[in-house]
Length: 332
Ligand SMILES: Nc1nc2c(c(=O)[nH]1)N[C@H]1C(S)=C(S)[C@@H](COP(=O)(O)O)O[C@H]1N2
Ligand SMILES: [Mo]
Image (cartoon, rainbow, N blue to C red):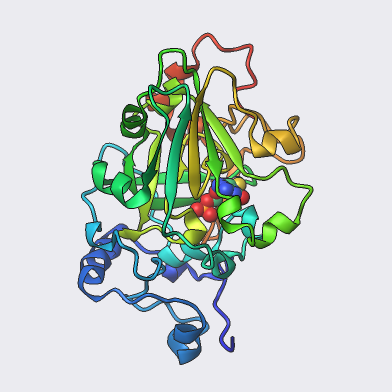
């Protein structure tokens, strides 16, 4: 690999994609997408240091069988007041511990085979079943939503996801009335070679969870696409969740199993350090992490510090979910 790709936090201000430019680019990409699969395209000099990326840039997985579905119409209910994070920033600055406990995992993550891919629904459901990801994606009502993403590490992005309401997924799964929680599980056996699994002290597989009420709230979103194309592996292909009012670690990637339960699931981070990462993990600037403040956040790619907002700015949609729950550790 001869040519160094600029990292997300090194991007100049000018590389941040304003909304209008993105829309134009998206129209253009529709006809002229070119996949940057790794060394080949990079070594060919397409990514020069300091250069803003070519308008045809794509991080979508190669030969993704759902590529024809995108772009999808945007749902404008969820408007965001700040510019979108640049596509390259979103696709190259990631947390995905299965591929390493640092931010530069995007190339490593591309080795994750995402077809065939099966999602299993089990636990308290009318009938356990497994579905092929392409069948699932083609069954669901796809739309685009621009969401803020707030990592517990006090950095943030603004991301145009494509996907479908988690409520549609819950309906599809047909849970029993006794189900109170949903447990989400990331791949493990199907790609045991992922380098992060060698860090055996982590409690693999990555697990996350939420209540049925949270999952059927309008904001909870299943992600299948990014920037008007299929979502790349590094962002959680072929299926990840987006819960924009919660810290980013709740948004589990590359999901293989969805289990309906009566008991509250214990998540990956909660198991590692329950005093720092709880079940609810709702964003709140006034509740510091035990080791740092959550009052502000750094916008990756813009290198700008902005105030953090209660529920990451989504209080109007979700605050009522937590009424009467003051006894719970709602914000960590
Ligand atoms: N399976 C899995 N999902 C994961 C993680 C992970 O390490 N493994 N990291 C989480 C964290 S801490 C964050 S901030 C977001 C980052 O999503 P992004 O890389 O698409 O920005 O993914 C979340 N989902
Ligand atoms: Mo995170």
